[in-house]
Length: 332
Image (cartoon, rainbow, N blue to C red; front, side):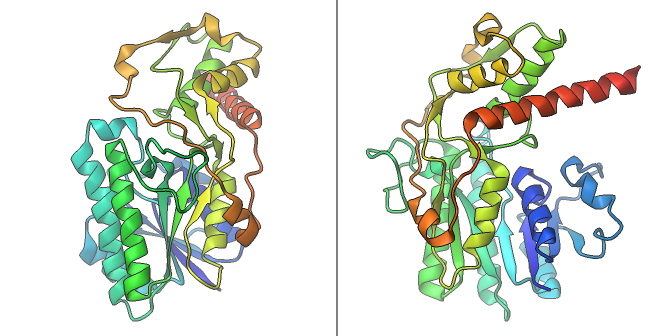
């Protein structure tokens, strides 16, 4: 039975990847922060499966900056694959907390690479990079050779981490890859992200629970995909004969307005009647023209993003409608 270790297993990508690995008959280990709360909603279905939890799924407590504890856990578990998904991933928030963003996204990755470098059994290593490394690119779409030009603290941190992964691959022979992921969303996306903020508002407004939705700029364009499609590609990357970096993207750019339209159409409403722009949500610097060219992933991994923007928005809105319905039943 192959084994994998996931940092960030309780996050959007981590929870989907854990499910996919378990379906492929992996033993899955996850690093989690020790907090006073034991609720980890994205993994609830796995915790409740007595054939999985503590039999093929195991959690280990460690902070991302606690290299000693992480080293001890990796020595004990000896995973075949290590997926590094953890870190502060909210681009807007990185302007407010740039030091901690860089501490975890940049230095946290370097510390993991150093640990892996010293292990007698070195797992194959995957780091989730980001389209934010390209910032304001001069060419569109971007591929694996596009120069990096980050314009956000998060992008700068990811650029450092991405280059460190390449350095350790080339200089120390690690099987280390960067998954250069463009925006990928799902029903499990955190509520502070704009896509989930939109779908929750569309659901709430349609039910009479909310009147308005306040957003920042509506002009930003993103290459939006569906998270489970992307975690499948991450696994495929570590099954290749040689370690390489891959852009994971849909190849299509859509504006915030496009996502608003798709989400509100799912509940038969016109978003323009409910959305207000708020300067508080404007970013100091905004990326532009971020569209990915995933032709390398398609040719070498046999992977292609399968979910359209409209399907993604509808899926998320229906999920949020169900959440409100469940809450109403609980309160009645």
